[in-house]
Image (cartoon, rainbow, N blue to C red):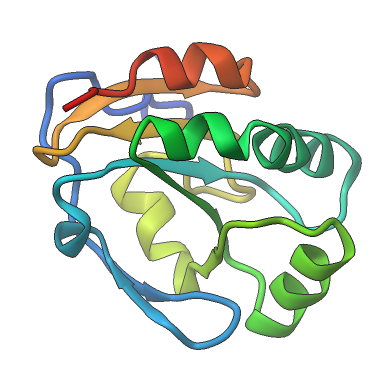
Length: 149
């Protein structure tokens, strides 16, 4: 009944929508140019809030595991570059945070709305979605979906 308000995440096996966005330093990231890597996209509601901080710090703490699996990690949030830069620096996050201007990426990935719906996706090296979950899944669960070449 309310599927338009609370849509499911994009299904595994479907092509990941391409996007281009800047990170907190103005570096441009285009998903399709990251082919050959696993890419984790962490959509989260707000910089420097309790659950969001825990979630991104858990990925920070498993950074070496992600790297061993040829996996790039990106936070995705509509806040501005300055907010992302402060947040990333405060918690020494080793991965970039993309500025989702106008919630364009969140809308492509069914995470938009009044607030960003906390969601995690893993896009495989071929550009297809290998993992998609609402909420704050364990990092180990996300990384288990990584495609190892």
